[in-house]
Length: 241
Image (cartoon, rainbow, N blue to C red):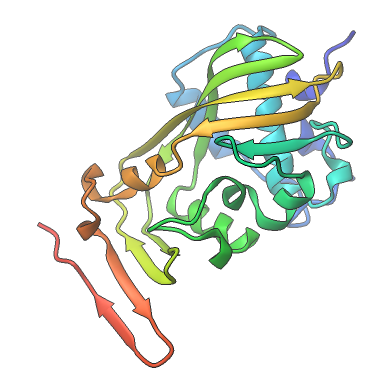
């Protein structure tokens, strides 16, 4: 069987001119792909299993982030597709289309709350903070139909982070210009067309926020908080060394 284009070309689905794109056209991943090529840890042989898996997931991420109609997603088996994080309940493609890819994987915490940020707001927030966020496969442990693999997602914090946390507080973390580098595991079940039927992802969702703190510290006192209440506004800034 001939291999589908979405496992051979990391940019395959961006050539789908007839798809319904979130901003009216396919996204431009030129800078992200360049950063990936310059700073990746692994160089997989063309059409090796790790290479095929890497390209499949990259095309899936483009579709999940930018195609607004599930029928245009070519990387999934729409009749079976589910997505889950850290052993949580399986979610449908429609759920991810509604809440966004960031909100589908990040639970409410002291730095961020998915309920307070819709799809567009969450993407703008993280894209502004980290203009390029590259992804690669590090190792593949089993092949189709059940593909288990270890992955890496990385970028640079080039602008301040501002968002609302689980208490409704406005959180600001100053840009430190350093790396944000997270790793995790995933198990994906695929059909005979190498379309994703289900994917289960495991990672530490707080790893990114810990690395966003100034100079990589783990002291939450380094974070500015602006707390908005119905009757008053209290602004507190914690002095940095």
